[in-house]
Image (cartoon, rainbow, N blue to C red; front, side):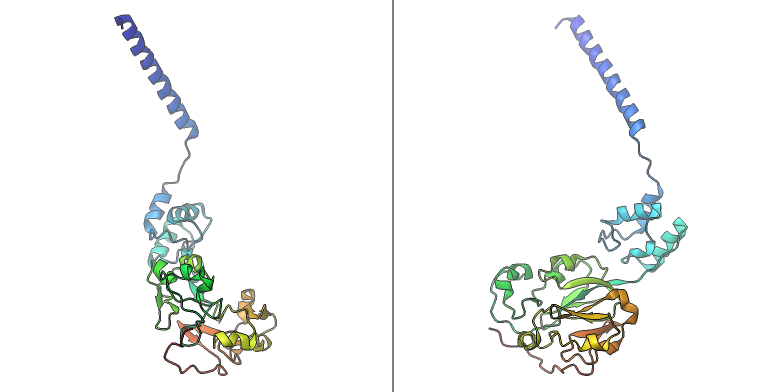
Length: 289
């Protein structure tokens, strides 16, 4: 290559570089999107759990929503009360209503009250068992007790009791929804702790058929519906269903005559059954098969 050609090529590359740099500079100026610097500061005050309990995909989107004024600091349930107040003071907003939400299990059919009609042998996973004839439990809607929910919980909020039933520690629960998503029987729901009336069952069987598989199943007897204020509880598909839009009407009166104790009152991490509920004295698991 001749010296002239080399100089021409170098000149071309120089001009091209200057041109591209100019285009990038103009584009950067034209396309620049301002981001409020407070977002970074608010994000640092959040727990970085990215659990989704606040209703956003993670802490960063939540920080953005806070700075825009689209949500309240109090919706971040994993954060401490003190840090939530710091965020509110920093942004000059109210903390907002901070009603704790927790996971609730719609099943009380542990191994001492619910029958397994077949023995599942395979990977210890509810999801795996569920695809093999439903998992072997007599109640096809019931908890399989293999602990997928406890395994997926990063907050140490779910433990399996000796009867193979998940127990939620409300103090640790941040309402992240992981247990809801992993349960193949759709037995978990996220509720505010102010929802104290709860149906601990999802069986759609009726009467004796339901009790044949689980001694604490809802039998659709409708006593709770009759005793509760009008419209609070309805029987749908052989199962008591609570209308939580009428939650202010809820009281223990609805649980008192439930014969199996399927509808309960949950308060201070204790489950209260009605006076008519059968007493379960059995301490050992029921025979399988």
